Length: 581
Image (cartoon, rainbow, N blue to C red; front, side, top):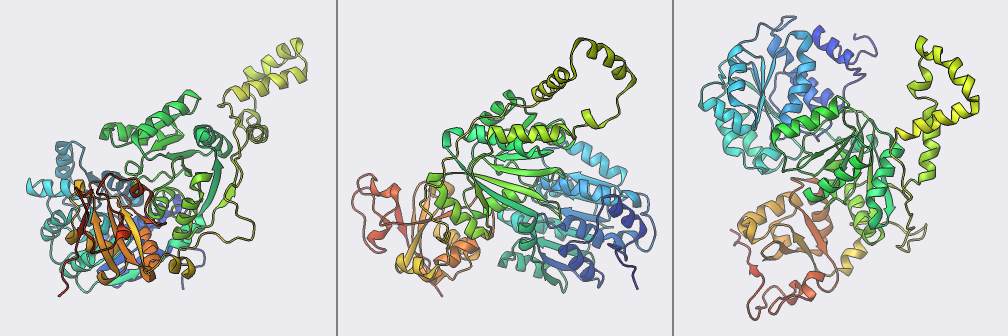
């Protein structure tokens, strides 16, 4: 019988040491499920969310195959395992996780990702490695150049497989899997399990065991959500006050555009914060330098766009601030998931102008989170916190050095103790950015304490919308939107049948489509949970969408009817669904 309070008692000794060094008290749900299933020697098809501890899970699951009964790994040669990830950041994050996990066993982990020098990667592979972690395109390139050999591979892991398929890497993945030994073990991890994932599993896995690990409740439990009422013109000041009040070792602030990232980073830097930025306009070297500055403590605040922050895992990240509201519930969860990972606690703060409160409440309802509403932290509150923190600062808690004691008599000869204490407090404050005076706009929504928040599943609201609800999708003709591609995506992500989608109107920058009233709430909730955050939908309410009421001549509201012809030069077109059967 295993002794109590031993987190992973059945693991080889080097891995127990690695976990103990990282203060792992107990396995996460996905780690427990994967380790139990992998002990049976089965291929695994695992549905688990980002931040659930799955990297350590599959790292431990393949340890037995790589050690092959030994206490330590053999000298590095041809790679024994391959991990495929959708993005550079995630691949590099996985490499870092596996390096500390395998270090006591003598493991060597090599990354092969786009944006890095392929010749240096080729030399590292030639020198020998145990595990290769890479992105699909770069791994295929190494295979075609024969700098990556696969004959010794015992295990292949596909991490975030649904994201790789959404990004168009299916052909590369199939090429890589076809080049690996047929008798390998294959672990496939995916946040969702659409038909494309089932098809991939059926073709490249043998008798795979399906595991659906519910981690949403745990994730919400580890993240405290706050909604801060703000005046729009004071958002930068509120961000500053939140950073000062929380005093987090590492924080990330999300903006919706590159311009907003540049402006906010410059503003925070000017006020005295050590800040870096992440956006799509940075090169890979600049991104790596920014992330390294956050990891080693030279920077405490990262200002980023959604896409740029994908795959970031910073152990000390405890605060996420949404300076701009997320586009939908899925983006909210993706952003917030940068903190509260693998058992660590975190806080996610949304800045909500009164005019956008209802939209924020819709997102919270779809994400199934209940935030604490409040006004922004005031300058007086921050000064009070500064006074409390000053007493625990190392300046006060460390033993004075001899040279410090030598100055005591000199200082006391010229100043009273009260004067010296006042000077010390002033010096302490000058090291910190000054807090801003901000306004709490109050609750302008008119909601009383007993009025319930927005509920997307309320049948009365659905009935009031009529037999069909119109949605807006942020893909249009310029994105090559086409009904034959849109319908499968909408039905898969929205978990509805094709018959429940009515008319589809494709415009230059967006698409509008009908969903039957009794399926609309189910569609909205499922779409917010599944798939890529870059693809967003928004329910349209009222007699006509605001953007269409004052449209150009010939522009027709969706409520004009599915079969009614448009007059004049149309802004959009009605796209009929493909015939069934």
